[in-house]
Image (cartoon, rainbow, N blue to C red; front, side, top):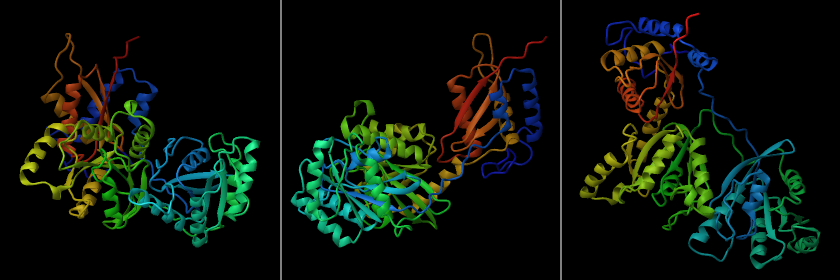
Amino acid sequence: MSDTTPTSASTAGPTGPTGVSDADAERVLRSQLADYDLDDTDLAVLEGADDAGALDEDEARPVVAVVGRPNVGKSTLVNRVLGRREAVVQDVPGVTRDRVSYPVEWAGRRFTLVDTGGWDAKVQGLAAQVAEQAEVAVELADAVVLVVDATVGATAVDEAVVRMLRRSGRPVVLVANKVDDARGEADAAALWSLGLGEPYPVSALHGRGSGDMLDAVLRALPEQTAVGRPDPAGVRRVALVGRPNVGKSSMLNALVGSERVVVDDVAGTTRDPVDELVELGGRTWRFVDTAGIRRKHRSSEGADYYAGLRTQAAIERAEVAVVLVDAAQVLTEQDVRVVQGAVDAGRAVVLAVNKWDLVDDERRRYLERELETELVQVPWAPRVNVSARTGRHLDRLVPAMERALTSWETRVPTGRLNALIAEIVAAHPHPVRGGKQPRILYATQAGVRPPTFVLFTTGFLEAGYRRFVERRLRETFGFEGSPIEVNVRARERRKQR
């Protein structure tokens, strides 16, 4: 997109507020740069290259579900296949609770690997929901990897998992995990008794035997997937973020229209990001439910530490972050940190005040004051009062997200931008500091997603003055729902030879 392409942000005519045409203001300011030393990076910025990339489109990939009873090493095996610590792992059962998908490539073939929580038929409550999600993963898979702890042998629960898999009719690759050396292979051979064919001895922790297992997985997969679907063109990515127990999983379930995510009154039920395609407002969105951000990563431990890292990564992969806060609870430092994390990642932001149906008029008055004082860094974020439990006002999320994304991708014409800068400099010049008064020579928009502006100046601009420039940019061009960045390049006048 060129610098002169009209956008929704610019409604002014060919002349700015001072009566000077935008093009003339730009030429005058640009001409001043001829007397200053500019490096290659400066010249690249002035070229105005657009850094807005096209959305990645995934092809239809076969789907492989990894299942087994709790604590047999399913997530460790997933991490071994991925080659990085992606799935949350801790040496206690029940860390994984939802079904979580990861793209994988082996021997030139791509497929989707789905990690699941531990399956057990004789459980209730939260554990029963986890088992149900594992069964759903099997139904939505082309093939299944059943993980069994070879050091323990086949248990009654393992045999129950086998019966469930036989009913599904899916091809199964049996993995005997925790075979760390040749001595453990006899334990693996004992698993022939499960009736699923050859057990593949693997050490998920050390990687032993994982290549042979993956070769077997490829042989089990059909030529064409029966369940995998590519993302539709133009799908937008949305991260649902917030502190624990604000209703992120309930919101995803309400948007999907089914119990896609395990929901429980216990805070921290979600550990890994869980995503789902949802049709809303005539277009497709990929919503990602994330783990609640409890505290700073460095003071977190175990699964909470890695869940926090996954959440931040999910925010960075998204385009817009819907930040949920609990209307019934006083805003906390955690809420502020979640919002700041989305802003620091440069994502578009929508504020969703959840559980609105549970608060009375008095609480709403206090909440208004809290939002105004505690979330002072995002007065530009559109706000929607919703109830994930009842579905109230969830339809208002779509226009709010669309406004935020439009702002996030807006490019301001360079002439109009410099006309505004000329007006700012004329009416409110930078204060004199140390006998010097820095001036703004020229401005350009270096990129979008988020809108990023570069100011070429004769000296350092104080933070307060940069905030003033940002405020004027918002007053003139809007940018509702999007952070904007204002960078300064101080340059010295070229020495005369």
